[in-house]
Length: 358
Image (cartoon, rainbow, N blue to C red; front, side, top):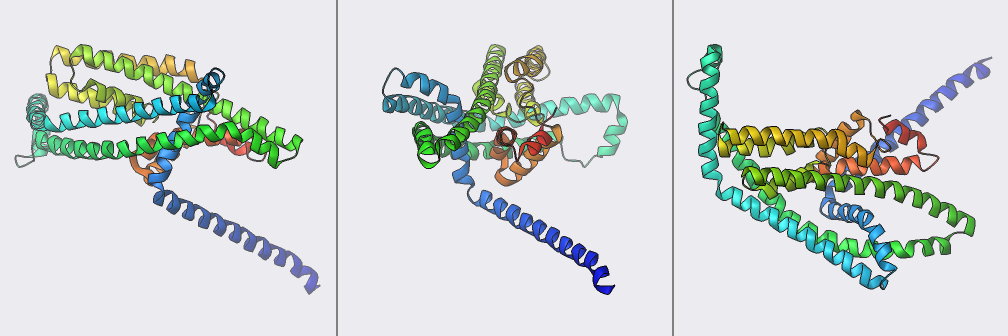
């Protein structure tokens, strides 16, 4: 009687111990991965950028390889891409240095604008002045300090981006070279049927990733070109810097749209004060963002790779903590790639569906 009654208790203890062991293993794996990703940030960021660029360039590489020798096609595409990356990084760095030189004038303009806004609010909301008190720090000084910190950090990020752009170009060269040899290596390593199955799955995954990344890059470039034209036509300084910021922020849902609209609009306010130029630029820029977000990008990307909003916010938080601002730029593309891979593998397909926004 005692022995038979003890079996359920033993089984329960064993199940609890097994659950605890599995949970402990997962905690160790996640903690180790977090530490490794943080330590290898300077290596992984340019590598992932090169992988994404490889997916964008792979169709063009295949077409060009049919007309010229593979080394020539590889050298042309990888070389041009590296030159473009370094050129954009240099241009952004120069723009940030120019913005830094204009900092004293921007601080004075911020103080004037803040005083006008404060006087307007105080005239219609006397309680606001009473709440702030006579000894409160002027808002213009706070804005100036924030701008100084942000611009100096931007200069440092752009300087680091020069090195990462050159490193990404080197990685891209080898990634595109190895991609041409991958099918042959798989067929050599596995039996024929298993090799063809692996290549079919890899082809489906690559096709979906290429479609998403190309659409995201093209939609970002179109929006950046529109923003560059609007700001240039409106006479806003450093329009190229704001256009590139718009392109990068296009990879960050929700938060990116606010940043890519708020920063150039705020700069236009400091440049023009509360005038007609500022009003026209702000309205037209907002219309461009809304039209692109509701029409252009859904038309190019569709709903096939949609992510749950909760998953997007979690990805932004996790990758932002691991790699800072560059991690936020890479967060959604990385999560979409993981979702696509999960959906094309039978064992992980339920996880891919859980990540989906549909």
